[in-house]
Image 1 (tube, rainbow, N blue to C red):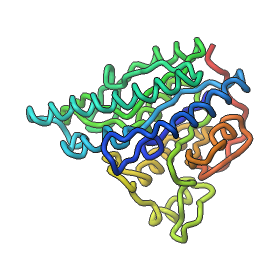
Image 2: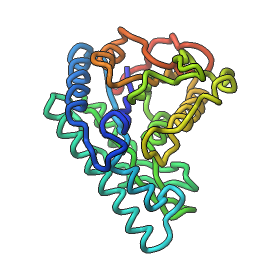
Image 3: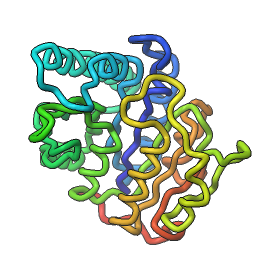
Image 4: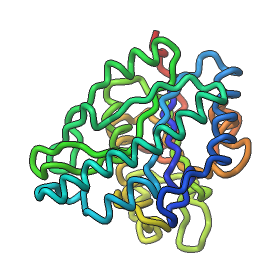
Length: 274
């Protein structure tokens, strides 16, 4: 079974404080991932992470997502890439130290977008990493853009693109909330394209600086992906709850909010890469 696992910027950084890495949280998350991999030899993982208070703060300052044209904006573009990679380096070191065989993959090295939509990304190295039982590690980054000059690509955008080329069964999006909340503060157990109109008023942004749109964008993007790949199950849940990541990876828990095409997918996992 192949799982795409996103560690949100709100989970591994304090999005209210620039360049603040939550190493203690990262260590606990890494231990849970390593434990799940040891217990289930059929589990394959692609891990992605948001840029949190590293990339988002700088990207907001330069409005990189809207386009890159002036010399100052191009310098900002390069700065966003640098700080996003710095967070990736910190997280990779923690994951490696706790026994997760991650291979850092820099999205901006090959990414090309067209008016904000990712259209090209090297995916064969990621496939080969999975074949050889490594864990590719991608992250929210910058991208050249054929219309805007440059832009931002979120981890969800990268997942959306890679899901067309890799046999992913589950996508887990982890932050510091228990799921998607309704207007009464209760967790919405499931969202489908049909039920979205009933809950869209409750969808809000992010508690910190987030140039990629916060919860509303995440839900809409993942609904579009579920519509394209109907047997895909996507869950948004709380990565700060000890043990929950490991239990979800092992299929022992179905936490948070499920996003799917029309019902809880029950088909068996697709063949793993080998």
